[in-house]
Length: 292
Image (cartoon, rainbow, N blue to C red; front, top):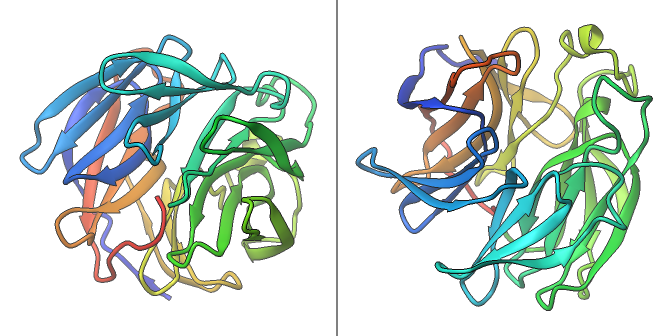
C-alpha cells in the first residue's frame, strides 16, 4: 500500500453540497443538492449553472440523444433536460423505497439508479433496490437487498456494473445482460467483516464507499466520508493500493481533465448550515476509464 500526499487544491468553494461529479466535453458536471442546481466547471475554473432541480439533484448521466439525465432525489424520479426544458423521463416512486441518489448510464443509455432504502439515521434499516431505466423511459428493479446502493461504475467493455453498498462497506459487482438486466451478483471488494451497520458512530470508523470512479488499470477510487475523511483506491478483491486523508469530508470523486488524470473530489460537511462545499483536485498517475 502506498500513501498519497494529503494536500489537494481547492478549485471552487462556497458550494452547498456537491455530488455526482461527471466528466464530459472538457467540463466537470456535478449536482449541488443544497443549492438545487446542476452545474459545470470548465478547465479555466469557470462555474456555470445549468438547470435548477427543485427535488434536489443527485446522479447525472446522458441519454443517447445527448440530453442530460438527472436523478431527482426527493421526487424519486429521473429527469431529462434538453438544454431548455426539464421534464420527468421516468417516475420511480413506486419502485424506490426511499430517496433516490447516484446513477451510472451505460453507452447504450441504460441508467442504473440506487436509493437510500430508508431515511438514514432516522428509521430502522431497510434494504434498497437498484433500478434500471431504459432509453425509452421504462423502469424496473434489477437488484434487491442492497445496503444503501450509492456510487456506481460500468467497466469500459460494458459488461460489468459495480455498485457501492455504503452501509455494508463493500463494492458489489454484476454481469450486465444484453437487455440491461443483471446477473451473477458477487462481492467485488469488501473492507471489513462487520456486515450492515446503520449506527452513525460505528459507520464513521470504517471505510464507507460513497461516490466512486474507475481507472484504466481496473482499480476503483472511493470517496469514504468517515471520521478520517478518506480517499481509497482499491483493486478487485479489496487490496487497497492507495489511501489518503483529507481535511474535508469527501463524498464523491471523478477522474477528468485533458488526460483523465485529474481526480476531482466533491467535499462538504453534512452538519453545516452555511455553504461549505468544495471541489478539490489531485493529480494521479492512472487515467480514468469506463463509465461514468
